[in-house]
Length: 307
Image 1 (cartoon, helix red, strand yellow):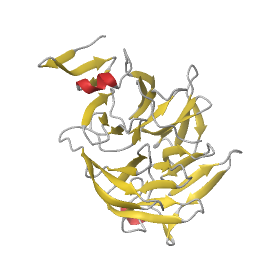
Image 2: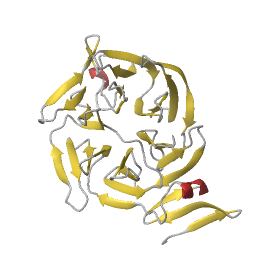
Image 3: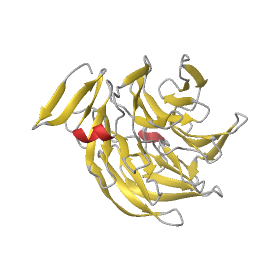
């Protein structure tokens, strides 16, 4: 392995990985043997919202470029959709359809099998949503998304709060939480009994209990990610099959145990904004990081979106 290694008291604290790095010894049980951070694409503007599709490719957004790109192993990067409403977060529903949060269109949309686009939510109680940011689908088909004000001017806001919402299988939009400063990434625990939600403005993650009817209760602090002087903020996240949370934040991807213990950080050459598990075995962590797209191999698969 090229680069450097730092040991304190015989414990591996940091080690270079082909231009990126990981920190803290617990990651040796998470990263695949010989794992290296690999750059897949570059010269982009600000990448976000990666999601792996079962037919063998990754979709991700370049928000300022108003473009959704498709990356397929062994092929050049290509445009999937442009314009795209300055899309940010993406996921798949139970039928494998693409669900997207669009900044400039201020909506959550669904791409149908024939390519047409359906608006799932764009207003709450008659007022336009702020700027839907990230989205996740529960196994019952309901859709959860965050709605900060990133992407709009203050005078464009019609709501006086930044909420977290649920779209029921009947299409009904329900406000779940309204006391976030700037809600961002979100992810379910493997049993879907907990929902993790990042707040980028205050740099922390809160966790909520998910009730049988889909509502959220007992919100509490899960992780404090404040890092004075470090670039980045609590943003997108995903969860693996063992319940570990891979959350983007200052410096890189913070990996937490289900009890909130920080296991380490995966640090690519650029600060990441979101992550997704992919490849056939879902043991590759894809990272959208500023102007580039990166990946690293893991030992444990992530939770698969979609069907």
